[in-house]
Image (tube, rainbow, N blue to C red; front, side):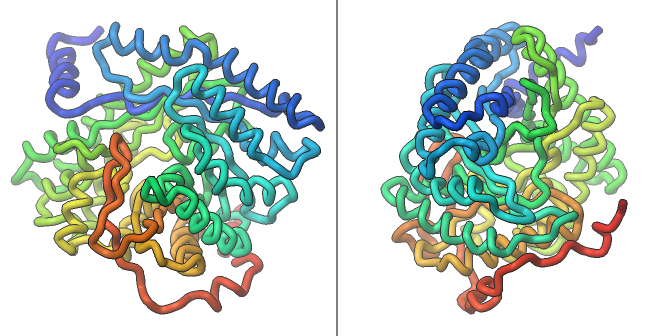
Length: 452
């Protein structure tokens, strides 16, 4: 039973501290939709998505009303389309992207993830066709998100795929130039990608997952910030313990919502992703949590240590609250989606190199970062390679979601609105890495990959 005090705490978290369930994501296996005829395959895909997810949005809305807890997004993730589409006799995967988009619109979700490929050790014909289709798919659809896994700790880094993704990102930005390169905000490049991540743009339904599943992504930077602000003189042990207890409460609410949604939709409950996902709203910022710990501005010396404490305490609190923590889980540091991060960049406290250092201890990687529109594909690939190396060596998930802002230079902004926010264009190093990227092949897996 919940006590009156716990109920009042929850009400305060929702009303004053921006607590919400960021997403309920239904994962759907499309493996049985593969067909030699691409139109038959797409018909199966549409029917399966709309059949299983037809009540997802109404269920989420009814749960939000009954429990008084905002559920911001209802989303779908599917089996990587490179796997589903490969048996089809076609070189054009646009039909699959359009089918996903149409099905997502029919059931009312805001995003559908899974226009994806797993190419960490090599690229098949189906993978290549999907990668080549990504720019057009993200330009011509509204709801489709894409992700590509190019590295794992066991396999190393597929530099051929990394080089290709630099060109794909450039092309995607160009095709969506009229929207500040918005297509790139729907594309993530991963190392060690999890198969149960509910957050976009990187969500897909892994091949080891059940037929269908409900995964929940929570939020709550504002709640954690308030807790930290109340401990101005506390030592780090007390600070970590407080964050851990706060994460425990947030996670319990997330699992409750996930289990209720799964029961009503008649599918298994999967995981709760305990990531602190910021928004552009004032007070809902991961950067401001770090500043509440005693940093004058996010990005100054000490920022990486503060983020490490935050990430670890959130994971510990979540693991205490649920046996089914999964996905990414920890703290996100997307520049455009975090008012504190934007301010830190504007005041020149936070730079790309410091963000890269912070990704060693956070949950994802270089996220929603805008760079000058004339940044070359090889430079983008080199940025990806650096981030993949951090993930591979540290046996963790890392990712890159980068926007070469068409026609814009350092100090200007890209404007996306909503949860995607706005991002100041950040400088990149002027020296070339083209000869390094063009070597191709695979950077071998580290010695600690030999753990069998």
